[in-house]
Amino acid sequence: MIRQLLESTLRVSTPLIFAALGGMFSERSGVINIALEGMMLIGAFGAAVSTYATHSPWLGSAGGIAAGVLLAGVYGLFVIWLRANQIVAGTAINMLALGLTPFLCKVLYDVTGQTPAIPIAERFQSAPLYLSWIMVGVCWLWLKQTRGGLWVSFAGEHPEALDAAGIRVNRVRWAAVLISGALAGMGGASLSIFLSSSFSRNMTAGRGFMALAALIFGKWKPVPTAFACLLFGFAEAVQIRLQGVSLWGGKPIPVQFIQILPYVVTILVLAGFVGRSRAPKALGTVFRRA
Image (tube, rainbow, N blue to C red; front, top):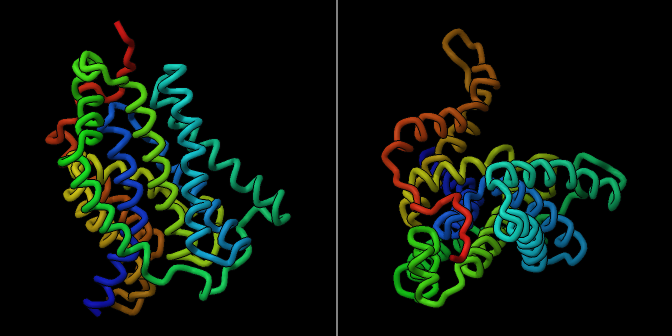
């Protein structure tokens, strides 16, 4: 029982880890990214469509990553180049993905609910789980040991100093936002071709926001953020296990109460720790060269 719960925790936390790492790149460079939900959703759709067409989960995940990058490019266009409000633009991106995916399903498959089922032999069995933790280590090393990691940190903390050193701040932010889209797209791919057998409408169900909460809880650092994702993954795994469990007297726990458990945990974590987390100083500010 405990082993199964731990295995389930690791599996369901995989999409959250990818998305949270993506959000970390964007936010450490100074760009708020509440559009993670939309990027995950479009990534899940792109991965399902590509896998169904190519019969390869690796090519399918590439399709999901490409879809995430494309949507991140649209987001970057508005918030970096056109200097739109990042909260409003992120909300618009989420709404765009929510409406665009069923429309594309209708165009491609003449249905609006979900894409065709993918055979189990053509889906991932465990690769995304291992890859997510490899990415945690890679991101930690990259941020700590490379010049690019230093540039991203300075773009979010002291963009004027980075600009004075001759580095284009907005170029760094563009790269960070596109990387964010790629990782969020992979998180969506983990949902549709690893944890599920197809794309279904709004299948992210708030996981992009949970990833953002894990990022804040983890103080914008890769390893603590990954463990925060495990906490939320554990809450979701418990929610799955509790479905059908009976209370005293033989009455089952109402499914509505069970389904809100991960979101309640998210709210409690944010309420208890968001005040203790210090965001990057230039987060949400538009950079203009003097």
